[in-house]
Image 1 (tube, one colour):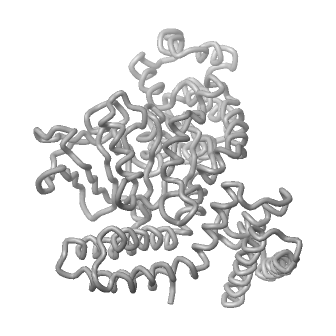
Image 2 (spheres, helix red, strand yellow):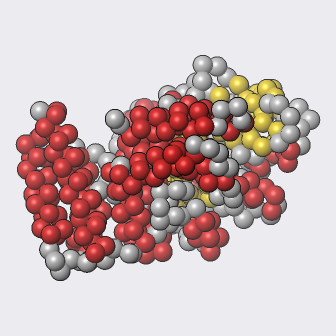
Image 3 (cartoon, helix red, strand yellow):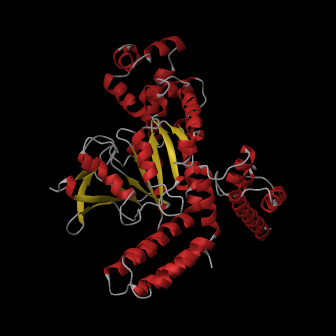
Length: 489
């Protein structure tokens, strides 16, 4: 029986115990969630670029990026057959709202509702990206309005129930004390709330780090590398990736008209182009012979930023990309969006069954603890049995312990252990540090070597207790990889 099947069976048992109560309907919803897309919350401080990054991940400009009323409300973006915006008030039934979308983000008419009285908005939009991920846009932490900032805390760090998010993408400019406080709040060494193994850090607005120079992203990657290696950050997020959010959003929504405007800039000799792009003011107000109006130039700055205009015109001039499609692909790569998608895929999507089962089991455990009923003891025992015996949960516990610094050893052994149990991705090639297209025979040989290596460490009487437990988990991971490779063969 798979982990999801075991979880579904426990939920059926719990529904029977709580039949006739409101909790039974809640549990049925949790069971339905096992078949739904993974829920990923996008969180961070005010002006970190959350909505812009969400738009880049969706591939469409849906989320408003201004400071309007709707940005103060938790907003869910999910796939569906039609287009709809629905409000869930704190009191009363859901209401379908009118919305418009002319050329950009959705503008929602709250229909007289006070934003403070709305629990959440749900935007249903047919989207390939949203078919695998339901994205949750949250108000900024550190907002001037305590009530607005509290909405994100209540969603991701609720006092008496499990968070509805399976994973979190957290945007930070640097490690602000408020960031650390928030991330620690939902860190748990057990598999309860979002922990380092299902939280990703994004160094947002990365192009601004180098003041918009062409080498800004290189500087941002170095800073992200230092942040990701910091012991405090490692305890809070699994990885830190730099992303130029505005450029990422533009990469997936690039138009032929914008490319035509940029070709005019790219057609200039290098020195005049550099002088034109010294500042936003110079770009908008000088060189009338360029053939672009001030409105068109301001539109380019709004969509690309000064860094983006510099980079894109350079790519066109050097013919690194010659078409709109090629340019969009190049911008997605250079903005960090491609790398972020790879990380979300390897750390979240490939582990979605584990993350969703964890959320479901913890919801059941919390219910049986806070509102016990006859028969609930058996349900609670079944939950504990799955959590204690399911190997994916054991891997998550070891990863959390590694990140917290509770398992110590030689750096190369720690790095090997973290990779083997899925710390850099769930695919066999990621675990074995092999190319994705490595032959099956090479994968099997490498897995056998890792199995022998960690069996020796587990059986060595000089190995510490914590490392021995972790080594046994690594051995089981190697055995699982070998079994999977054998089945494929």
